[in-house]
Length: 299
Image (cartoon, rainbow, N blue to C red; front, side, top):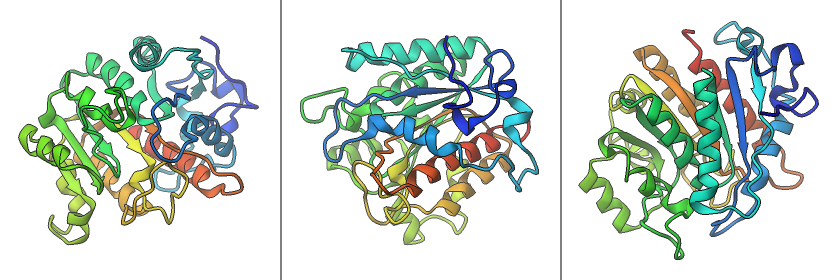
């Protein structure tokens, strides 16, 4: 398995802290884009994140720690999909995630469109059969198919729901869906925290704690950056107004750590970089490093 050197790896860290042998964390890039329905460019997201990460500071004041040096982070060369799409493309991702989990690595997968998340979720579910899924997104992605494809980015969670217990899925920030998706959520008892309900105070004051109360001890996180409000995340295919802000989102992870639950893996998807608009790339890179700090808060 080929890894990237310090000139092109996540955080641009030296080989001493980024070899696959000595790293506890592995970053996978899955630059897959096949079913985009509005704005394109998600396939460029993983590289933009890694490029921007060179400007993320190593030190985290919340944990008084430089995690990248404590645990090591290796960056795997991007997956080459060739002409593979849909299920064969997901198989490539899932095989690589499986291999890294077997090597006892904490795996972060960078997309690409949200379709890719089905693969790392399936791989982690195999190793953590009692886990929950914590899904940040503007969209519930529960359409059985979209624009003729069951493998659409708008259908990824519907595919996950075919093999994963729906009562252990929690969605946060949802604010755009069709009525069939809303009915699916009710029928399958998916825990959904709509952005409008959060804004209207329909959950208790500490809504982040309400989110955590729905989760099992082991948690896999799938994070679509369009969960954020377009004011801080304009670089995504379908930006939706009234999204979450950065600090209130991090409060979900703070509540998760405080509760004793643990993040077992995560993916971050749907960054579609825009030329000369660099702050979303850096925000996403910093989010990833921050999520790693929460994942390793007690390790």
